[in-house]
Image 1 (spheres, one colour):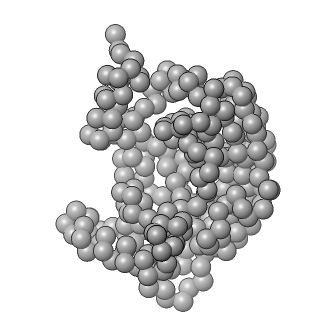
Image 2 (cartoon, helix red, strand yellow):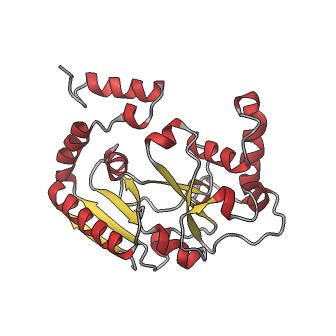
Image 3 (cartoon, helix red, strand yellow):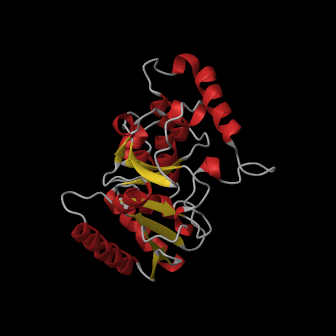
Length: 259
């Protein structure tokens, strides 16, 4: 196991350890470094996107499934899609609406990652911190977080759906910035890793990751902090579905009542 694991028995310990890791991260990278955070409500979840997991009874999805997802989504969405969208934009929309893709969601916001770690947690929860610069240096031959529209030689379609012969942009995965044209992506401070291999990031034996493990008894206190900060379903999902979930929880005592 190359990643560092930090076990936290209280919310205060979690916050202290995250701040310590952030100071190390900022001392390593100059300028305004952006770490990636991701929350898991179960310790068995892997850092692997939906397309590369075992998505069907017969086994993992394959390259033909990826092509079919893309073509079917574009064809059936029809007038719901802006005709000016790039194939990267379409990929981001597919991920946003739950189609299995080779993208894994991350966020710049620790509070957002904490929300997803606690949402539905039945026991302990995990928050991952990824050093995207180290990942890209080792896997993508670049020192930067990648803007897919300007960095890659080809677009998503010509890299993965109908390859045009251009080399793939990484060996296993790279950290990328999406264009935040989707309201949820903007409100969640969303980022992605783009995966090319079926290896979970935590299995690659590289020091990109820190795993903060929060025990179940500390979860109520962490949930209270999210309430104080105003991080909830509607703040992260600014649409009618998010508002409905927020109201249901509020009326059942999940968020409390406003004066």
